[in-house]
Length: 407
Image (cartoon, rainbow, N blue to C red; front, side, top):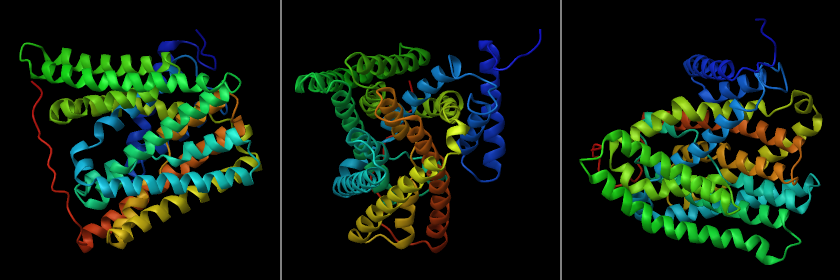
C-alpha cells in the first residue's frame, strides 16, 4: 500500500509522533538546548502549515490536550506548599509584582498594536503567567533550596492562578457579554464550589488510600489519574477550562504525593516521556508558515517579547534588590520566570476559539513561546553556573519535605 501524505492511519501517526519526540530530545539536549525547542520545531516541520506530514486531528490534538492538562497538574504537584508558607511574603510580593508589571506592559503593547479591548486583556492575561521550563536546569545544579529560587518557583502559583482566574472571567464575559453579569459569574461561582468540595474531600481520601497497605501501587497510581481527569472534566462541564481542574487536582494531591518520593518520580517520568512532549509538538503544528512569514507576526511578536522581558526582569530585579539577592540570583529568577508555555498557550488558544484573537496573534504568541523557552533556560544555566562558581551567599530554605516511599 502506497504511503500518502498527510498520514491518515492513527497508529502510524502515533508511531511518528513518538519516534520524533525520542529523536528530537536525544539530539537537541546533547547540544545543551531544552528539548522542547526541538519538539516545537519538529511540530512546525511535520504539521499542516509546512510539510503536511501529519494532520493535527485526531492523534496529535488529543495527545497535545492531554499533555497540556498534565503540565498544569504537575505544576500543582511541584509547588512546595511548606516552602510557600515559610516564605509567603517573598512569594506573594514577587508573584504579584511579576503578574502586575507583565500585565500592564503587555496591555500597553496590545493597545499599541490596535487590539480590541477583549483581545488586549486576554493577551495580557496570557503573557502574565510563566512556565518553569528552566526548572530542570536549576534542579540539576542543586540550587532548588536557594531562597531566590524558592521565591521564583513559589511565585508561579500566584501568577498562574491569577492568569487562570482572569481567563475564566474574560472568556465568559467575551462569549456571553449580552447575558448579564450572571452569565459569566455563574461559572466562577461553580468553580469556587468545585474548589471547596475538592479541597475538603480529595486530600482526605488520598491520605487514607495511600496509607493503606492492602491497596496495590498500581491502584494508587490509577486513583491519581482518576482525580486528575475527573476534576479537569468537571472544570470543563461547569463552563471554565480543564487546565483549572488539572491545576486544582495537583494542589489537592500535593501533600500526599510529595511525601511519597517513588510515586512523585513516577508521575514526573510519565509526563516527561509520554504526555508533555506531545503538547509541544502539537503547539508547533499549530503554526502556519504562510502566516508566520508575514511582517505583522514578527512586529507583534517583537512587541510582546519586549514587554515580557522588560516586565519579568523589572519584577525580579526589584524584588531581588528588596530582599538583598545577589546579581546572579536575580538573573536566575529572570531565567526561571521569563519562559512562556503552558498557561500562555492555553489562554491564547481559548481566546482564539471564541474569536477574540486571530491566527496572526496565535502565531506571534507561539514565536514568543519559542524564543522565551530558548532564552530562559540558557540564562538560568549561565546564572546558575555563576552562583555555583562564586558560591554567592544566599539564604537557604530551611524547609525539608518528608520523603516516604509509596506503600
